[in-house]
Image (cartoon, rainbow, N blue to C red; front, side):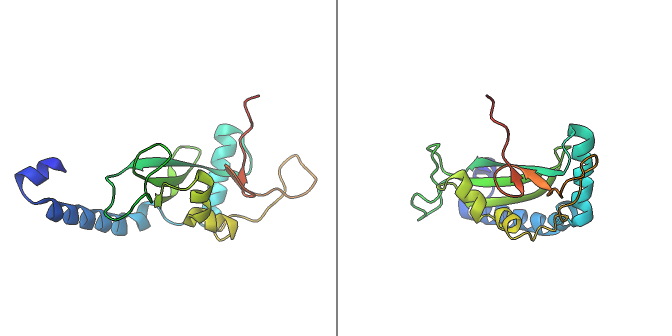
Length: 165
């Protein structure tokens, strides 16, 4: 962005243009490339995990990443993280093939990872079961009970990874 500032416009103008372009790109491309998955889509993701990683009932993996930003005006320590940087957090659920299924960008980084997850739209939808995950069902070769579909991570529909002990 620096070359735009020095060559053509002032910082506020360039910043406004970048914001408008990003918002326009998101509004036009998100419904095409990051549609909200329906029950059938989740089953497709589950089939991919089963085939590629031999992990039945898994529909995705979730992780977060701190994205470094310039300190927003009047934000105090809201975006100052434990890493001693100003950042926003990107949460994403990915498929077995590393394709993004859904994302959330913009949580302030001063909270713990668990707090960020709990307050995110992704976390709330998983807790309220409004992500259209398929209902628990039987698994092939198992006769006892029904098993939930899971996202690998930290709650009821999120599975803890095994410790490395």
